[in-house]
Image (cartoon, rainbow, N blue to C red; front, side, top):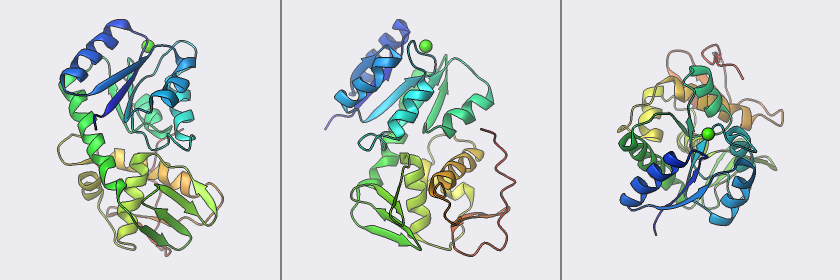
Length: 241
Ligand code: CA
């Protein structure tokens, strides 16, 4: 089956450039140019991955991203944010609200395509069967659903994969380097603190109902899923909302 990439972008030349290059690479494409019509277009087109511009007429890319993450059918669709802004705070903000990756305009098309392929590979292992359970956390791998007790937890694909990886070996502490390699893939360059951003997002979603924090931060060592938290240190999560 051909992967369908949805381009949500109001700048015509960028749409043309992306369409041409993605189709040349064998992807199917679809386009939305207005923010307020984008969500509906996503629902209709059911894309495999979304390229989402930050600044759009009608509704911002951030709000569209949030809508996608709260939609039961769409919450696992990977999103790459495209933006003209270059500040680090925006990058972190983009990741915090639910995007899986981020590219600043003007971007290199080969790099964007490499990131698309990396993301598509990243969501692949999620399509396995089975169930992972730790304390009150349950991951249904077949339907990609996550529960805390009876509460449904809304996770993006990167957080899902991260949680799955931690849940496969509870209490084992994984260094951030290893999480990057296993969850993101070794072939693209991602900063180490991207792991912290996604852990922070995962922790927020997991504890939203006031449940105890089961994600353990081991200072200078990494992260694990654990009910014992003797040396939890969250000071490395210094990013602001
Ligand atoms: Ca724009």
